Image: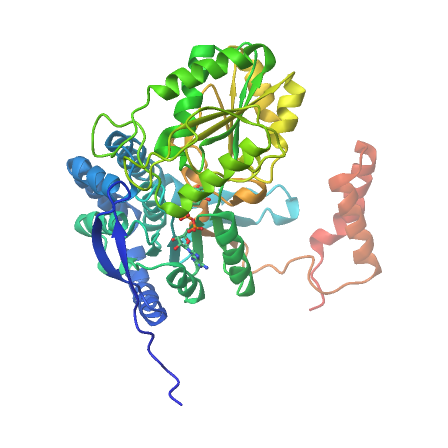
Length: 524
Ligand code: NAD
């Protein structure tokens, strides 16, 4: 039997979710192609690393100016393939990436500088220690469709600037966006083998995990993340897992009603609710509950749903039918269990098959799926609470812990509540937008993931920390080496007392007992 059977590539089509138009047909990368790409990447890594951080920063600068020049055309590619309004493609994708490049340009040199490690232990004073941050080598990136440009780009920039090379497997729904990113980086000077895009679905991603990569950065659903975590554990492959969320929004009774309701409507419906940091659950203190609902319904009814390429559009389509059916089934479940649908709650079939009306649900409970499972669609489910304690308990009553928001005129009250919420990021008086702060770490707790992207914590994930220790007295044997015996034991007991005894008298006594060790030559 032949042992190296070649897998025939399957094909798939990238589709505009607003119109159903086929944008391009692709051949999935086979497992063989994945292994070949990773081998090429590995061969390219030493050269890319040897360029040095200043030269890599110069490449990022060129990338940044190319992206800035082409911002409008890149935004159009994103909108055509992912559906979001053009202005969102510009602000939440292109601008986020321009700023992530700025962050890497400004911070990578200092980040990668050797860091001296002073020693406090007197026995170690003859040593000079320092920390080196070295690239892992080949970073595999598997990314989702909802921010198809900014997610792979921010991760790729951090990986490249720290001296790694990248093999990127984008979502099968948004391959064009990833190819656009690669094209800009290659034009800026990243060698072809130092950044490769392999298109395909889950099987291509699974092949990447099994290939000879040194670390994997995965962004996607909890279900896939768990599968990937298991596969990675089997070969001790380090991973970053950026997974789903069920972000709570807490509206305290002193919040500005107009601001909080606008924030809720934007936070729940931006990118048609398909943001990992979307407002997925909204809790409102009883005294504001009915007026808040009224304001949200009024504002939701003013939103224009349609094709994202139309500049007047506020809310675009969902990515595909499967996503729409999840939204529909959660609304049906909530309705059946007594929730009120105040607006929306239906498909907008006249616009196309992936459109769902922005929906406000009232009187939801934690028995409903809409408050427990990630929706990833244009739903704003709202329920009342009585006091801050109850709001915090409800916010933390979730398997997820990605983001959260607290709304109040009293910042110290908001920050006190924020400290008690189990989440990777909590915003006071805004939602979602911390993803656009390049300095802010992004990552979840509980089922929302492991590790970070963005900021210095994101750079830290891209490097191995190596401690180098260099002794300044190469001709002197260390006093703790062999040559043990009762007198040495006593000297060392004295030394431990010198270091850690509570009273100065005992320390002095310890110092005297340990004196002999200083002149000790050692028998070996
Ligand atoms: P998904 O898990 O279906 O797919 C994500 C990626 O994994 C895709 O590229 C897919 O092809 C690939 N994949 C699927 N099965 C695989 C397997 N067995 N092995 C390897 N790769 C595999 O997620 P999605 O629908 O593309 O994205 C939406 C999800 O992503 C939501 O849950 C959302 O909350 C989450 N998300 C999280 C963040 C974050 O930063 N925490 C950001 C954006 C999206």
